[in-house]
Length: 490
Image (cartoon, rainbow, N blue to C red; front, top):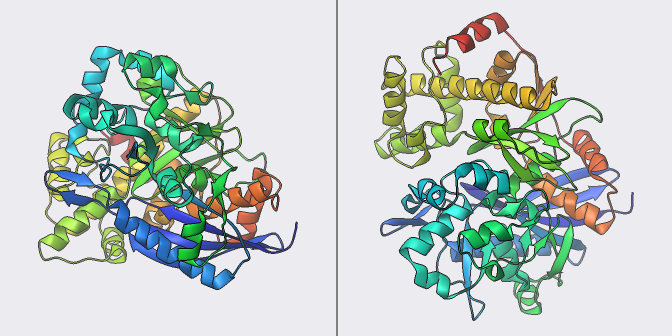
């Protein structure tokens, strides 16, 4: 291990973003928050967009704060974000318009439209990616149908984290893990799937070169460095998909049999495997093969996560009932469990709106009693997520032949103690929760590997275990939870 070094991590989530300063010394990682801000959807007429200029301004505020803190000692900077969304860069190198939000309604029906061009099974065979209406492929298909003129003006299509890196360093690139989420990469080769792109008449030249995690893609421009009061920092493609960074920071013991759950707005539950698994079973079960760092594949499923609570809370707030997240958790914990369950993949849950009403419609369809009580709705959400976790993990184990003995939960969802305990209860196995800032940790550690300060992914994970608290949840009331699980009508 070399001397102390610091790295700047720009970690962008669908609800909030943060600029973190990561410092590695004596085989330990410390994180310090420089700036936190809202990202979130921005209504623009009849569409939902990302306010890139505002978000970029917040990012620069954070970088300037980190630069002031470290002086010239920071080594590099890297960006991570949610997947699938992208910015369109014109011939002049500038952003043509605000990027669409993945929950925008223009994506509705695009999977069916795509399947008229190429069957779903063939699309999956070419990409290995779970079908979600907002995947980049379907967003581009929507643009081709409704606004072909904007694509005619486009020189490059750059996905979100890489877009912000481009705005600082001027190099257009596509980081592998982030590109893999869009359903346009051949996961067997790790490159854009030329055959698929040709079939859908998508100009491959608009898609930048794919680079591997840990690649130094450039430096902050002299103009940006002067504005921010920093040196011309190296810009690293860290594993630009936030889940790839989060999984990189799972504090798993060597040779243990573990699964991961990156818990936040989405719940991403999966296994780390060496090769993509693309067959009839993974297709029918809708498992996704996304790129991981350093030669790994994340075999997982995207499960509707804390979005159900976030959107319910927003609805109650708009209607005069303000609850904090800890209050909603406390209300759920004090409410009798097993009163109802919903399928977290219910199609209505995808879009913003009156989430409590959507949950009640799903409850009614499944034969459960409806409720207007926030406490009961919060409890239904927790129990439903627990059910989804067990269904997903059981199928993963059957598909891979691997039996896991621990579920590592990382990310903001580790703060939801009730959900962590319920996951342990229904799975009948240990849950290890932490770190909360897994994504930022993974971002920093990939930068540290790129700089030579950390030797390997294995060493990085040991460092996480040595640096952050991991809370252990042992299973409780497993007979009751098992009976509840077996009673679920789907």
